Image (cartoon, rainbow, N blue to C red; front, side, top):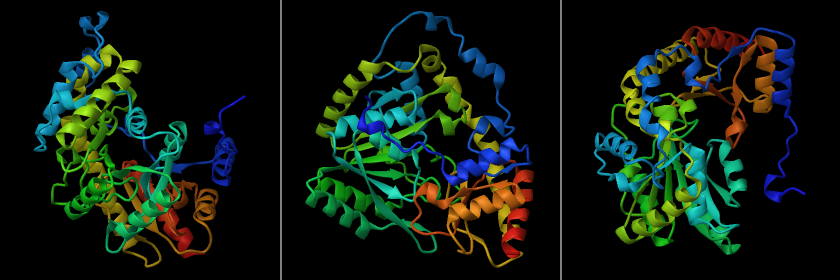
Length: 394
């Protein structure tokens, strides 16, 4: 009765079962995996945001395939500040980056075609690939005093897919990566352009965490990329920390003939769904302006949490933190005495601290734990102290 694309194994894994048991028992829980910015104590400009959602013009239905011009002009202005000369006509509004991925996957791929994705990276991609009948082929990010794209791995998996008569349609980059916090470097972007141009492939760049840099240099934005057909995805979920408002977009750049054809086809896809509500579109200027209030708060919390991590890690030599350049997450490297899942469960049961095991993000080995840097700082400090005491006493 049901499609093969939704034939997922929905059984709970051991980690989820352990967390459910912990909560049912009513035990204390220090959650160091916070991902919802609306629950961590940020101060929003509540009156301005709520008023922006009550505009009378929202009562008139004026459908626009790419989204209301006023919203797209505001987003184009955001990119102008980054030195990117996007036109509002280069933008398509969506209700989420997940929907944006679906639009781009549908645009580029026939059923069974491949998109190359980084590993480690965000686990949602598996479901998006299944739902859009796209085969996701991982290429490796390697760590050597920082994360970098392994182009040998990328070319190897691309050649393997093509030898199996699976066309590769795009390379996906997360910039900065979730959870490694690594940006794509300029020389890597040039090599990506060369690979994609030579093989008639596009670049899909997820930039939702772009603004949260922890390095001195300003990272590139793929919205400026014109050497290969490029789709830059972002949204207000992270830029202004309002995930509940469901505002995202796709920016299309590249060689003019390819860009023009891509935008024409994307407009038909968007016109088929017309997914974003009028109140949300009309509120985009106010919600985008909220970043000037929210981002300093988040940056301060992220940096404070990194200081806490580094000061506690400096007191021992069993665990260390991997380099992070941006985003909301830190990766802890722990002694390998079993699987990451076993370690995360042991920490939960023995210390009441919740961390994500590395295998959630498709790390190639064990010994990785992922912590959120937007966790309230006191909770992070208490949790880390317990973690280090437990690991040190094993």
